[in-house]
Amino acid sequence: MVLSRKRWFVRFLKWPDLVMAATAVMALGVLYVSLWQPAGQAAELQVLVDNEPLLSAPLSHNQTFSVEGTLGTSELEIRDGKVRFVSSPCRNQVCVHHGWASHSGELLACLPNRIALVLEGEAAVNDIDAVNF
Amino acid sequence: MKKVIMPALLAVFLVWLMFFSNREKPAQMQTLAMGTLVDMTVLGLGGQTNYQVLQNAMLQLRELETVWHPDRIKPEGQALLAELNRRLQQGETVTVPQPLQQGFADAASYTGTSNGLFDPAIGGLVKLWGFHSDEQFPSAPPADADIQQALATPHFDDLLQNHALTGRADMRVDFGAFAKGFVLKEVAAAIVAEYPQASLLLNGGGDLVAVGQRPSRPWRIAVRHPREQGRYLATIALKDGEAAFTSGDYERFFDSVDAQGQAQHFHHILDPRSGWPAKGSQSLTVLHADGGLADAASTALFVAGDDWPAVAASMGITAVLRVTADGQIEWTAEMAERAELTPNSDGVKPQAVVRALP
Image (cartoon, rainbow over all chains, first blue to last red; front, side, top):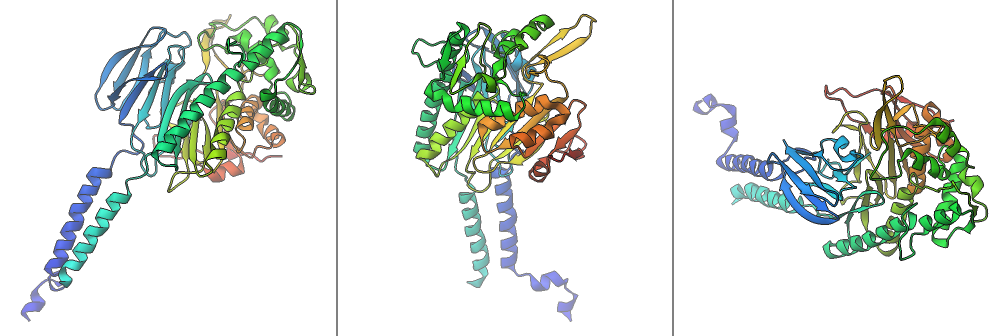
């Protein structure tokens, strides 16, 4: 009768079960930290000038900076994980009109100034491989 | 003993999971070519070979870019189209050089099936508008008289007879709505011929050619929303060997003010019937196994406006996604089955209208 007053789960659970449950919870935490990231969000920006890699920059750090292309100076802005051309010495302004880019696999370029921006990040399982436009 | 079996198994399983979730990292390379930024991804051959294949593909791409450029004459003599245009403008009758013949024949056939809505012979008109240049779009549209004069050229399928064209001073053949698709198709075919087990995704400024798939799933692409920056219109899983091409009014354009003081938006997709930027669509996406056809058809169907289903049927296109000028989404039954519309910022999926093909 003493036993029956204990709650039902205490009767069925033994200490190895608790070890297993604790391991599972801990492993879940480890997996979450190591694998999780916002779907498709790029982590790093690569800048190419005239098809040569010039620099890379993390998208986590907000900043505005200039890149010398073959025509002149283009200004880039990184903010909240996104990047854009603020200004460019080209006449058509296709690059500036494109606006912000933030997904891994996205591309931005100023052809007249020969500057290309490549957004990189680990592809998640349900991620997009490329953007069609 | 029994007490440690379950935790041990669990630990083994987790280590296995972490090990195998480390997916193969594809080889990737970018280059400025074909008037745009081309991004190539290769996987399935092992790291070293993946990069070797990319290197070769890049060289081939640059070669083909020179071959198909309408104006840029290079001293090495590989600028076949530019050289052909120069001779045509001197009034010569020119036989199409062998490396261009397949592309010319394909393009002529698409000019026919699109009823002239895709037409490489309007190169003079493209130049008049200034959309041929990466450096200099104009700030105002050309005079209508000049437009009408530039339109007075025969259709490309009438010009090309027995792999030869007869020139005239105002002639300029421009494959801006075809060469990228054709060249990406050729590059992909060359890789697959040598490495049948390769998977690749070629991205030419947003136009895509896919071969094979990722290890665990097909290549997945998103179609950009024509009006809302940074948002997707839809996502699509591409089949092995499939190309996705979109024509939109939002990429190459200039804004100007007309005589009445009205702001006007002039984009680069010209209607060969009027000589002015095509009206009626914001964007139009086509899927097809032939990159050259997908490229030409996305232009022709964009130009066709509301009549696009008839042109699609005539060109042999069955997967189409379109956004009309007033923002309505239209698609074919096949596209409705394959594409998933992206919910808007309120989490609501937009409505799309299925248009039947005749």
